[in-house]
Length: 466
Image 1 (tube, rainbow, N blue to C red):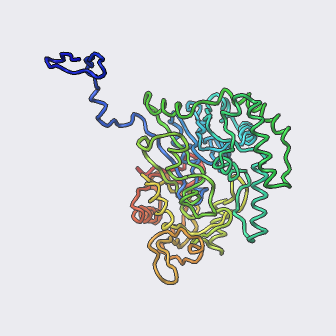
Image 2: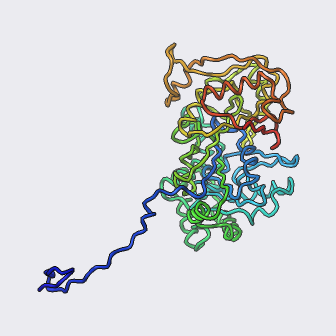
Image 3: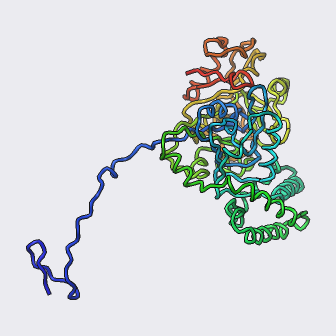
């Protein structure tokens, strides 16, 4: 059998008549790469945490439309001072103080619901900043939940490490590690489970509790009372829950918006790139923004690294520039270096630029926010770590092995202190000349500009340099 198509005889297959196919129209503009309409601005810690990220986020959140958390849990701690009121945040994005902005907790965050609502209540009692917070908070339906038994297990595991090896990890005992373990083991429970069929959720919850009881027979579980508490939270949580992927897609591709991402913890606490095993259980480097919010890499815009003008660390682990002397005590006292989450005294030392440069390699900082410069106001000589040596030989890179990092010696550059107050400065030119030299030294070493300098506790004390 044959047919005539375009003047040519065409034999059909299986005797079926030949059908002329219409030409498929194609939009050629699809092949031209499009620049994202909106990009996210990211604020990340560049050391071991406690750099003052909350203050930088609060500054940028003033004109933001959306402020996001992408990883971690209530093991993070950010302090923000607004109108002389000091607010402490652990799970809520610091940007929740901006009444014109939406706050979003992404899928990469692990949420302890009693902690979330308690945190909101405590901050409500401090001032008016948090009024109406539930109306401007959205939570991803894919975020995992932290349960009370996760927190109990966290404490047991830390105790076991101490007994078996004589050293612990220095966790906050907030259940973060065990919750992320449940996520990786694929027996964790998510926000979407809680706000769906509660009977199905209850069955899965009991199975998960039994799983931990099998591993830790001495675990004190109160399953029924926790389930009753969670049922109450489910009702409050329902209006806040949204499809996080769709939410971010709409925000990125809709009308012009300023979207801010608030990193928790810091680069050297990252589960992959940090000083393992003395790290947190999530990716707190820039990659965590994509996986923790559902944001394509091409939508990541400016990445700001927050660097304290010296170095601090909470808990145990290697700390090459630590000063176990009068200098360390001075920095600890003047800087009021106590953990926001645990109240633990922070270990203090000189600024370690080897460490910060490593953080820049991983994150690609657009610019730096240098915080707590005023703490150095009384120091006559300031040292900066610029290189590591091992057994007298220079180390070409930041070591992955913590046994190596504990053995390194540090090469320091010594800079003159300015020995006067910087707290009233509101421009680079108003800073003492020697403070300006300190800032320029940091910029030249890292090859990254310093955009802000912090010289006090308030939002207004963040001096913008350009």
